[in-house]
Length: 167
Image: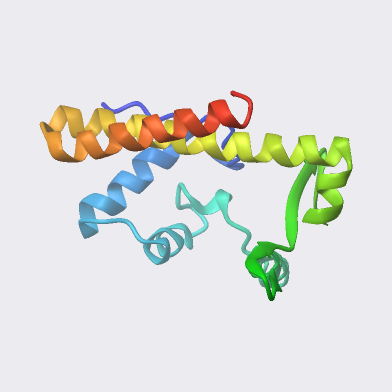
């Protein structure tokens, strides 16, 4: 039997990782891959193992989707300058509650600047973990070409982590 766990920092409510992993594996075995549509469809029945993970109240779910769309919009807007590359307009600040701040304002305030950097460190750490996990998989499969590429990417992320202050 395969044991499933949630990735460090993952926030999944409603079911344990073993139940989630087994349900996802069932979808994969049936379809040969896993899509978000297949996961949602498998979770629709009230007694389905994945059902508790999802918001089934359409009004609440629609609002959460609009919030996700807002995050995509916020992250997509840059400021254009005539004499240099466009720059990020808003950056994510996470301090108990999450909000977005004008990047120029955040850069001027020590506390917000530090919180923005911590957010980047978290993203680098997530990428490092993902690459390390994938590197183990391709190593086990004997795929040396992909393993070399992943190893190079991991080294680059190590440089980035060191440059931003370590993790």
